[in-house]
Length: 423
Ligand code: SF4
Image 1: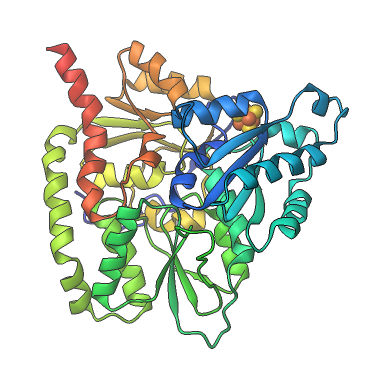
Image 2: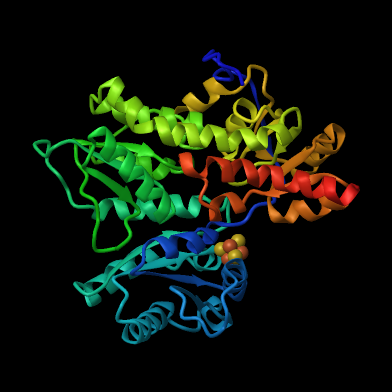
């Protein structure tokens, strides 16, 4: 593990590509967001393709009563023969009558709703006026035009920011953790912050749509996910201040992320150390088990989830893997500054995608492991290259100390499987 906190890749040149891309759209985020906000419902206003995407991504049985659905725009709507707004109002009224447990309804835009220029923000205002105070209606876009799948969460959280209760400058200082985390991870972080004496910790998204965290000039926030540029901008506009930090992945990243909060709240170094010592040691021990399997192996990241740079940092610094190329759909230099500083100098970085050229580079390098989307994984496996689906890193709790070994195991598993297949 490199201990140097050098400039790393802060100013490294980045290969920028604009070509054909292989990514899922922002609707995918509904799969983990609907589990998180337990009284919210996500109504996609889209086509049968959109319905198929979320149904198959979520593996929902036909008998289930999930908290998302698709209002299908059909040929009559597309031809302008039907009033889509009337149809939408009818579908929403039906839904809310059948599901009185819903407190927050998201109308989620899609490529088809954008093509016919259906104004979902006006629809959300109109429907909110009809159904408040029982149900608040918001909207965001999950369309696949120029987006990648994690931007759906960013758009959803950014839509929530304007309705967060407004706190004045006189309100006591509070910490807001931003980005959907599994409940178990959220509870672990709350306990760690509590052990440091930081008690006023709030989370966005909240577990309930009616329990929204207040925000104001007294709010400092930590990003728990690296793909929340629009949400961060909206929070900044509300007077909140971001705490610069690496992301809470691996023992090192989690420590630096927690330390950013500890410093902001004036936690004494001894208290910080005593709060994190045991879980950090557990994380380091747990990761060491997988280092033996991963050290020296090469890894190539295709741009997909926007988690690539923090993951590359964990794999290179804590698991001693060799980075061949680290691709990211978008590079937010300010949010990534602390991560880039920790990457080994000379790491090949790329932003955007020209999938054929990138496949040629991966084939030429023959890495031990490629981290990529589902569409690329099967062909690469058929060519004898091990793969890890990047979307799995969104569905699996990987943040924090107690998940650090699970994170390492996710990368070790495909390599071990390949080795077993060979013998
Ligand atoms: S939003 Fe667009 S990219 Fe996503 S499933 Fe619907 S049509 Fe496809």
